[in-house]
Image (cartoon, rainbow, N blue to C red):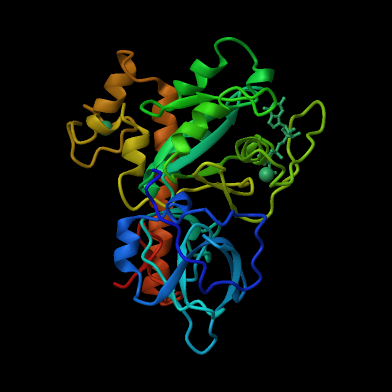
Length: 361
Ligand SMILES: Nc1nc2c(ncn2[C@@H]2O[C@H](COP(=O)(O)OP(=O)(O)OP(=O)(O)O)[C@@H](O)[C@H]2O)c(=O)[nH]1
Ligand SMILES: [Mg+2]
Ligand SMILES: [Zn+2]
C-alpha cells in the first residue's frame, strides 16, 4: 500500500457526495486490482456499487459517490449488485459496462419459482456473525459457512456480543461447529476484536457480514468504520430477537482501506453451491465420501457405510452427520427443482455459476 495513485476525478461526478470518500481515496482502497484494470474498457471510469435500485446504481469512485443509470435500450446482464464494479464514460451518468465478477455470494431461490439471488459480489471474506450471547444453532452456522465457501471467498466466524457471552467456553463451542474456519471474538460495544478485523481488511479487502437478524452485523460495521453508517436495531429484552432493521444490502468504506458490505438478516437460507462449498464446510465428512462399501450408499443404514462407521466409533459426531444430511438434502432438492424448471421451460434463466453469471445449457 501507499504506492497507489489516485485516479483523476474525471467523469462519474454526478451527485458527488464527498462525505463517503475523501479525494485521496484510491481505487485500491475500494478493492480494485490488476485483474479488473485489465478488463476495464479503454476510456471508462470505474466505480464500485454501493446499492442497486431499479434502473439505477449508487456507486463509489475515488472522487466520491455517484448515481448511475441504466440505458433501457441496452440492458446489461446480469444486473449489477452490491460489490460489483461498473464503468461509465467520462462525465456521463450511464452505466456503460459491468466488469467481470471475481466471485459472488449466492443463495438458492426461497421457493420453487425463485431464481438464485446474488447477495454480494467480489468479496474476500464472508463474516459469518454468530452472537455469543445466545445458544448457537449448529445447522444455521453450517449453512452460512457453506454459503461462504461456495462463494469462492473465505468464511470467517465473527463471534459477536462477547461482552454478553454465555460463558468462557462459548467461543470454543461455536468454533467447533465450523472446523477449518478461523474465528474472531468481537464486542462492538467494548471494542474487542475490532482492531483484528481492521487488519484483515487492510489492502482494500472486502468483507460481507451475514447472519440472522439481530446478531449485530450493522453495529459491527459502525464500529469498524467509526461512525453511524448503518441503522441498528434495539432488541426486545428477554428473547434477544432482532426486528430486521437492515433492509437493503449496502457497501461502506473502512477508513484506512477495506470495504464492508452489510446485509439484512435472512429468514431462511439455502446456499447455492455448484462447487465444493459443502465439502469444505464438512472437512470431517468429505474424505469419507466414496469409501463406503456401495458406490450409491445413502449413508442411512446401508451396510458398510463409512460415515456411519465413523459415528459408531466416535470419530464423527451424530450431529455433524445429521447436519450434513439436511444440507445435502436441501442442495439436492434445489438442484432437482432447477433441472425440472429448465426442462419444462418455465425459466429461461439457466443455472447460475459461482460468479452468479447465468450458464447457458
Ligand atoms: N451487548 C452487545 N449488544 C450488541 C453488540 N452488537 C450489537 N448489539 C445489539 O444487538 C442489537 C441488534 O444489532 P444490529 O446491529 O442492528 O443487528 P443486525 O444483525 O444488523 O440486525 P438486522 O439488520 O435486523 O439483520 C442492537 O440492540 C445492538 O445494540 C455488542 O457487541 N454487545
Ligand atoms: Mg443490520
Ligand atoms: Zn455411506
